[in-house]
Length: 396
Image (cartoon, rainbow, N blue to C red):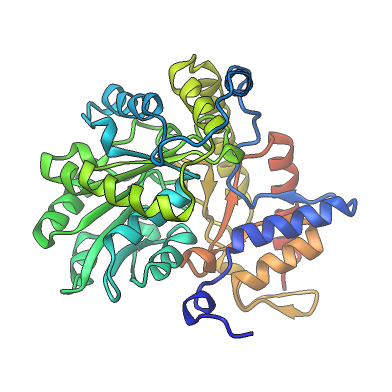
């Protein structure tokens, strides 16, 4: 059977692949500690689940408008007004099957074949693939560890060509766990204005900021707001990963295009999940606040433990629930006779020899690094990092 060139050019997700393998090993009775997938280890709050049950009982199980029920779209717009002071019309909100589909919709709506998108590395593994799926060209611009992974505006501008159409901002960042400064965001907003770029602002981790409140790039100026598409969702803030609830906020004209595209791909997102999301936004936020405090404590723990491993250097995460330690000291060394050439091989050895699942930096455009998600218990963090320490001590 012949497959399309486009499909064959899309790389599978390393993060989901590692998560699948680690789950298979656990099912076989192995004591695997997984730092792989970015999924809160908390249950969805009860009041959200009860709202979903009530929606089923009311018969809210039919098709809805493609971009979502109006009450939910109004609640999303209201949230951004209350948190960031940003005024969006409900008609500028499109609800989709997770933030990943929201991003998919954006690129399908704004890119023509050959259009380029600036992607700051280290980047979320799916960004380049989504751009390619829309016949676009991902252009990678490195942000350096010594700059706390804050992008260099001169490097970004040097990468702009007449084909550049958009730039992606992930704040807080997966996989770095860093939060962009207002100064950097202002520079990016000015760059976008200068070259008439769309700003794709992935703010899925916006509530998970520990050191300071994040700045949404859409608040920088009215021009920035007009050219920004905000992507967010319910999965991280409300532990609703399986409910598949993502959304965009943008100019209503772009929202209409994305809604039209979605109408022929997936149609409306789950009706029951929409009513659960509405309850989440309008209900008590205590569960979310408690979860954030736990993640902040875990961030300090994993940062301390990783930096106690000789040969590992890790920056303190400011947001999200990831760390991206520098493990370049392991490259070129051997473990039980096997020479380590890259972090893909390192991750394979860690899973096989120490039953620890991490994601290699190559998945994020970060050679010599590996990503660990601390969306797991303190017990697992201590156990897993303890095994990492053993591994590094055994390197030759």
